Image 1: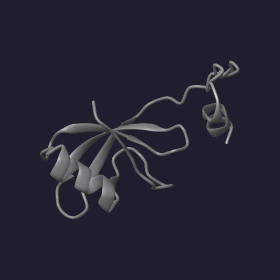
Image 2: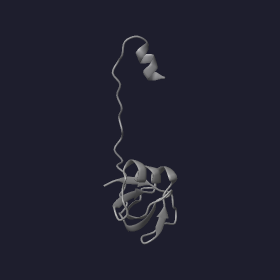
Image 3: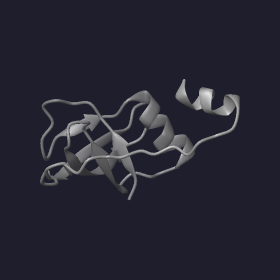
Image 4: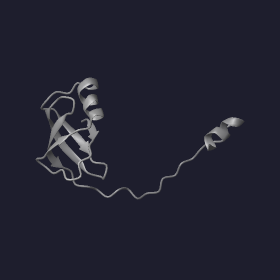
Length: 95
């Protein structure tokens, strides 16, 4: 299922939300999704919503149909490693 970002602090299940022009363009021009198709929305704060496209245009309007339960983020440490490179390539990686 396709996922998109939206920014509506007070959105709840049953509300209609207007997506940004960038996301709307991606939905209509690139993916060519149609009205009635189901998508998922991320609010940037851990919320995941199921939604249905209700109208297409310069801004896409979706209706929120469900909110997923927020799970605690994984608290395992992230370890990143870098192999040694020859010459100035290592300097570039460090920068």
